[in-house]
Amino acid sequence: MGVDVFHSPRTYSVEMGKRVTRASVAAVVVQVIRSHDERDNTHTDIFSQTFRREGGQEMGLGDSIHTCVANALRIFDVNPMSCVVWRDGVGVGDPAIKQVMAEEIPSIRKALTRGNGQSEPVPLSYLVVQKRISTKFLSVDGSSAVPLGALVTTLQGLQYSTFYINGTSPSYSTPKPARFIIAKIDDDLPLSKQKIAELSWAFCHDYSNWTGAIKLPSPVQCSHKLAELAGQMKDGGEEIAHEKFAGKAYFL
Image (cartoon, rainbow, N blue to C red):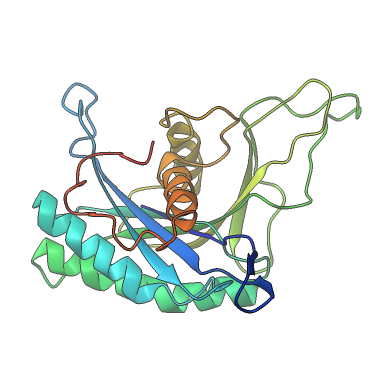
């Protein structure tokens, strides 16, 4: 699952005679993988939903995420065995991460448990993705950037386990990696921190119809694309028939 928020640029209001802040749009994208066997996993179900919000508001997405996940499980009639969440749009700093965790993880767990039809919680991994960072990595001699797809795990945060993936490696500039903060990983989820990094990198190759470089896993990249698309609409995407588009990546 990917979550992101798009903030529309300020526009000039003729009535008010000044530039005003437009509404922001949050997008939640749920991808359902039916099997871990490549031969059986020829189709991936996808459900997406947008939510119009007050301009500049990043937090408070618990109810929105719960609604989208619950709708996806109901429409696809699936009992989830595990869940991995990539959350973009969170500012730098442990307090912000702690706040979104407290708001969103309980809502996700509630929606997953209802879809599972059992009282046992569904194993969950929750990662915060930050792409607008100042951290850069160079080779040991400083003559070039680190190779494409390089994984850096030696630079850690104070409270949460962190890894960096260098998704681009241009010839004449210094690339910015994406920072992945493992805010939560359940003990019942059979994924080590190394496997979480490998899964994140694998999903970076699962996105189509994008002209630029991709540094984020496809679910959160799709949520970014959808939020930007809805944010440019006059109604903030409120009239999008999300259930009719279930199973289709219409925003691509």
